[in-house]
Length: 188
Image 1 (cartoon, rainbow, N blue to C red):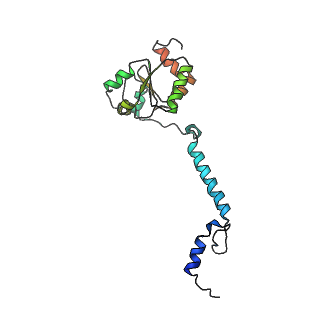
Image 2: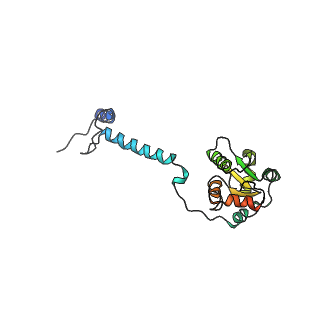
Image 3: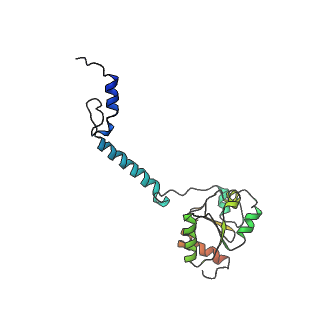
């Protein structure tokens, strides 16, 4: 049996029925608006939950760094681009432990707290004016950027080598070893 084509009035009425309990009928299937809202709310909750998880909730394989960066982790006052900027060198040499920080940075605060808890003194330097020089030296612009006796040791949780990062290095004793090797650590 031939059904007459729906009028434009009928189409408009069907399209505006989203405030009712039932969504428009598509073929012989009807989907509850409440059910669709539940699905959308669940998907939004899942999406925002994933966005708010801390970075360490998603383990990643340590990436092998280029050879130029490997020498950086072993040599004091060394940059992957060659010569270190004089103002950066001066800042790094101003104390045995230098932490370049960004105001309001949670990772900077965590690194600071961990160093204080271990009784390790350090100098805080605002990172803003040093970012281009730090990128030239480390390949990274993130805060914090921590240097011990002129050697780049990474940020809060990681660095250019898998063993780097203030928290892991303090936990495994490597941070203290670097300070002891320089014979400038009173509390190590």
